[in-house]
Image 1 (cartoon, rainbow, N blue to C red):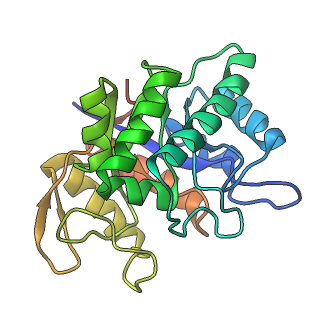
Image 2 (image 1 turned 180 degrees about the vertical axis):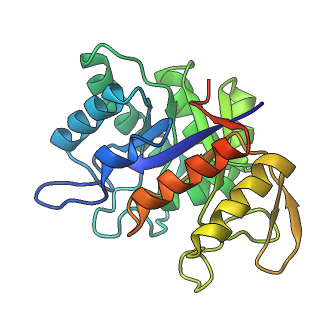
Length: 252
């Protein structure tokens, strides 16, 4: 039987602001990418989300982003590789401390938003991020866009990598995600999103916005925890995967 990891970006609330429904989404995913306090999250939320993940037997990963709380880490910033390295070491270290304090181990690192997309195409940024993860803990798994510079950099330095695909995002001819600034970036029809996931997992391909076929390797599927229908979608996609004899489990 085929096995796939379902991951979700969580722990994105901060202060008096509540984002997403982490406690409920955690019942349907196998891995959690927890915000580390720069693009979202705060120390209290980080600890709480780590504990919730452990209670639900969900693997924990750091979700480091750009220092852009107002833009939720989704705006591009002109940063140098050394700055990317420092940002990742800082944030992974923070999350790992909370995990260690609870007597557990962290599984992976997945960059967030603009940092993720920039590293998918920029080799120097990708190498800096991979180096940061490796130096903090070489046993951590690096999550990156399938077939990207980030996954290649991770493999080159000796990290185990997980090629990630997205349930509710559309794809371009080069295998990259359609920028969120474009109207067709998101797949709002749940059934179409699930069919895209099944096609990627079972056939290893994805259809672009132009109808082209692009090959992809799917080790883990991202479902967004901050969307309006996150909980219902998480439930539905897990059920459809299991009905197709695809086991949902963390990537190890």
